[in-house]
Length: 458
Ligand code: 5AD
Ligand code: SF4
Image (cartoon, rainbow, N blue to C red; front, top):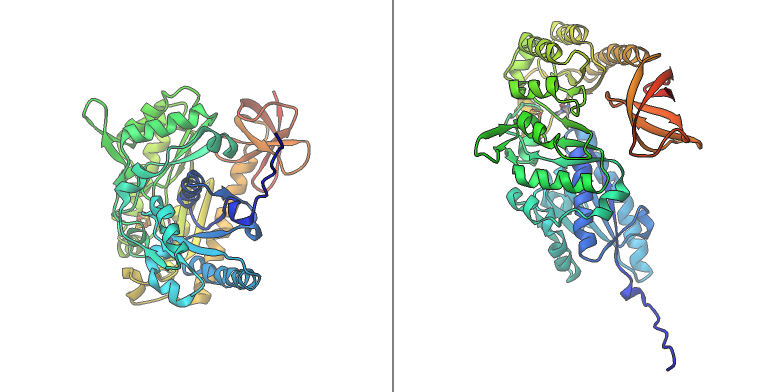
């Protein structure tokens, strides 16, 4: 019988999706899960925007700059769409994430080339939304349906995980009930929802089974996670970490981001007792002034924070602290700012993020009196960053000559290198012949770059 060749037409080709991620690690996780949902629906993921039939911008609303970036990117993609259309093709444009949640229909008004707007709680509906879009409709989905989100997303596939490497994020909690007066998160991500122990353990086991060695638990307020243990008792993040540490193959655990008010004794005990829990803690304080902390609705004082740090360091001597700082919150005086500088000196951070206060629509801070001059904000930011950089440098340099356990993660930027991570999240560069990706080995630090460490095997 004669072989009949079938020509593949453009129509038969699988559709390609390109996802661009802005903002926090939870968006990175969400982008992966959206991609998984679309791949399960017949899409192919592409790393090149020019190849894509569908472009999704997974957006961040935390500061004005982040949100505005999205609109300038949408301008560029609209031009691509117009070119495509004049050549008889199509390009579907979607906005997901926190700008989608916060601005909804406003996005279609400002950027009419957009076809769909989907908030962070409804990603599992993406395949259905896309079917509607293909009939020529514009779709805006910004309901809160977070309970469904985790239940309905497709199960993680071994192959998807394996190609993403030996470290992974795992969302355990989403949303925030703290209502810091500068922050949009309680409005964009909704109120706190914790995933169940069973779901989390199952996802962690699938990750470990696919070769993942290190899992970072994610939540906007991750240490507010709570759930019911298998014996019916109430669990917090500490108990959950003990359970996850039992999973064979998972050698390292991390979690981010935490609120000082939710660092309970069980969690501190986990830092004391669990080798798998890495000695690194991101614990934002935002300001060192009690007056500003109160105006920010942080619900603790500078002294509370310092006492907590002491307790944590007592439990785990080698823990490295990281933080977030905001300068120029409404009403911040020179003395308030000096208190922030002082708390930085008192704690001594291994790394930190610092920002100029950015008024966010709908948050209480935006309408407070005493907005700080942009010039003053710039000066204060420079000052606090100089101090934080100095501390980070000192921490990095203190590694020289030490032997550190390092998880080898991927090929390095330069040929002949592999790069891993120290327990304190520092990139560690070794000769590529030293060992295989996924191994955890002891290496001796020989010299440092700005933040990275160079090492040789011991
Ligand atoms: N302006 C400046 N920084 C902000 N952050 C959150 N909201 C704002 C804002 N309106 C910072 C906080 C938070 C981090 C994720 O972003 O420091 O911890
Ligand atoms: Fe925002 Fe405060 Fe909640 Fe963190 S704790 S997400 S800063 S409201």
